[in-house]
Amino acid sequence: MRLLVVEDDLLLGEGLCMGLRKQGYAVDKAMDGYQAIEMIEITEYDLIILDLALPNMSGWEILEKIRTYDLEIRILILSAKSFVEDKIKGLDMGANDYLTKPFDFFELEARIRNLLRQKISLEESVIVYGSISLDSTKRIVKVGEVPVKLTRKEFGILEYLIKNPEKVFSAEKLMEHVWDGDVDLFSNTFKYHMYSLRKKVADLDSVAAEMIQTVRGVGYCLSAKSMERGQ
Image (cartoon, rainbow, N blue to C red; front, side):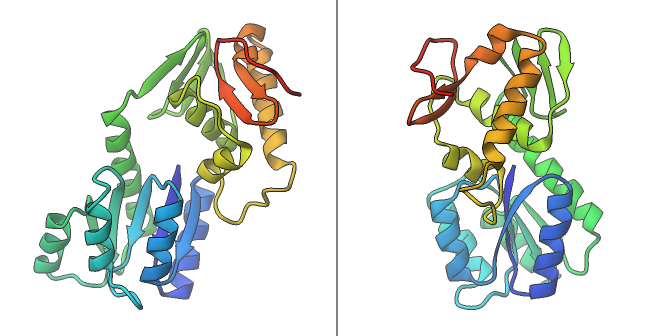
């Protein structure tokens, strides 16, 4: 899951990003309204943590702009504005939750989990493709009836592929969804995780592992169909 933290307080923003990354999320950070809008327009986020008092463009304006074209993305307002009127306004404008500062990080993380569960519940929680099943809520993957222990990155890659079967994605697109903006696109990190994912699946079912395909010169997909394969 990829999150965007929109917070102009440098220490708070860095602390939030560090804490959320430790929980396994891919996290990007924007420090003003213009930067936030630019990042939202070019990157697919699962949830946005939004401060209201921002330079250049307020959180209110960002919220209003997002909701003109995207009603699905989860938005959690995190603000020092504690008046009931502000909370009502934020929720009425389309925020999914509102938490006031100061706050407890573990409460924030619980609210994030709840919002992401709500998003998943609109889709299928358990997705099955061939002999592979993936439970997005419990974060469990099985090959046949046998659970497979995946790293967070491996799970994220498989989750994106299984939710979009038969579609080919470049390594950059998959990394954009699973890693945060600091990832080195030219490193071998992605290839290592893809190799490890295939090996763990192949140890239980070689046919299932063959469905995680490399399409030469294009990217990767999850498909039971035969495609031009790379290495």
